[in-house]
Length: 289
Image (cartoon, rainbow, N blue to C red; front, side):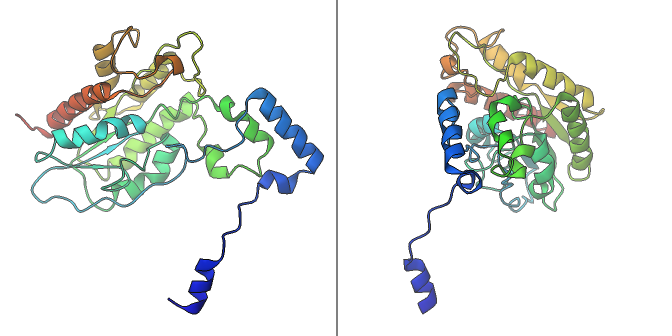
């Protein structure tokens, strides 16, 4: 190691400066912080929240020469059922997740805007036998839950603001563009419907203002945008079939914390989705068991 490198390594890193503090006089900054505290507004950005940054991850791993190669793209729901899905298709399909071989814990497909920005990186240079994809839960997020950032545009990076809610008409156009891009890199394309949003029980904290009504609207828009020949994996129906409709029925083992309006699934709920997705992928690739 060079002497200069050693000195640099030994120096204490400077603490990051608060952008708001450099832009506002102390009295105004105090007033802003007081108002944020009174309204329960978070003081720390949740930019690291999965799906809301533009981290595309790594390029795909090497393709198999003996098995069909498939790519699945999704948000934290796919991250949840992904490990079990890989196990179920092991030895039958060379399956990869968007963002590279080891991306399940790190890369979230986010909304369609992020998907379109990252799609070339996720696809790489090869031709996939199947691409299974979903976007939706991050498209329907109510941008009002981050409305306080709009008062400080210099604080928030443009890329974050672009990751806010995607209106329904834009979502449909994005799905159309998405499929156009996939047609050049995939022999078969399969869209997975967006999973249900639990009914909000009393005192539910649904900070992103998602609802199952929005889920149905976004699913309908996506299905209407798909051209003939694109396959559909209706994992919305799989989740409802597991839990009941309206989703979830009381005591459903799929959802961990109804009181918080959690959109995610327990291990049992994720396993149910993995089984259904594995069956859909096998059907698409003509694999019989």
